[in-house]
Image (cartoon, rainbow, N blue to C red):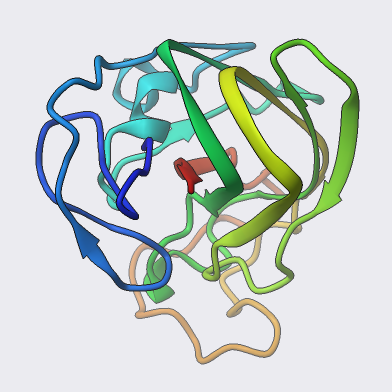
Length: 185
């Protein structure tokens, strides 16, 4: 999601920023080109990471040890903050999938910087840039991910997720990903 005053999405609808402010959409914004190292399936393609919806997500393939996603904007946008939201966007998703702990970010093919993500996988991570940047391309590489052993027990320090189909013990958890990647002014 590309955010302007303070938030816009790529579908031409009003969007909500992580600050909870609803804003008007910039009708001139064209959807970006988004590529990734892998996709779990077509349902979880890279474009889902910037579609403006928290209930959809890009998910990497479980064999991808260092997944990445790259966004190429048609028109550069100025950003002060990059916001990353892990794919577990609901309490009932906790403990059911892997999630990113640390990422590297490169803007416009420049210097690569490393950033830890929120330990609470439901909270979006706000990465504040030292100065406003004109962003044409953004590459995010997952350097470290939490791949909990699969059990039907709840995630640590959380209320148990609603009982559903238990995950068989010993099998790897489904893959991780991002529900939203957004730029804020």
